[in-house]
Length: 119
Length: 112
Image (cartoon, rainbow over all chains, first blue to last red; front, side):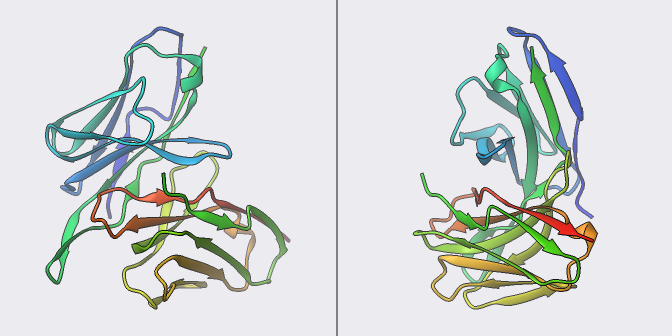
């Protein structure tokens, strides 16, 4: 079974603090993703990484940065937390496969989520 | 950006009833996924669909990849109380990106 773990289930931080959210996957997946989930807005992609040290901005990267120094670990960093970053943060990973001549991305597997509250 | 329209947004049903929900888009997708999320947990993959017209079952769940590649539906037969949760669809565009676009979810409540 694919296992994606996140460092904390619940986190409470103060405005202006630097926050690290860690995600680890144990299936040697190439791709890793960070989403935030808010009521009525669904899952929104913050950043993703398709290889070690590679990263790409998602739909809402402002106020966030990421780090992928090892294949199994993808960190989300809030440089200076703000109250509007209170949310559920979900990490996911996926692998690539060949379908005929096409490289395709396999299904995404999610971690249990980190509920972050910024006061 | 692209959006996935998922409906219904929520539904109350009686235990034993069948449930149907769907996702539609103006974009063409090459993969459709269906997830279930319990409160306070991450989404769990239910069914993955890779080809237009594909019909796949997982126990009481059946999902289909629409022929036009712009839609997908999920059916749950003979619902039980533990089916309660939020169901999400996700689509991967044919442009070959690594990203998936998620629907806003269908909240299912089952009345015993």
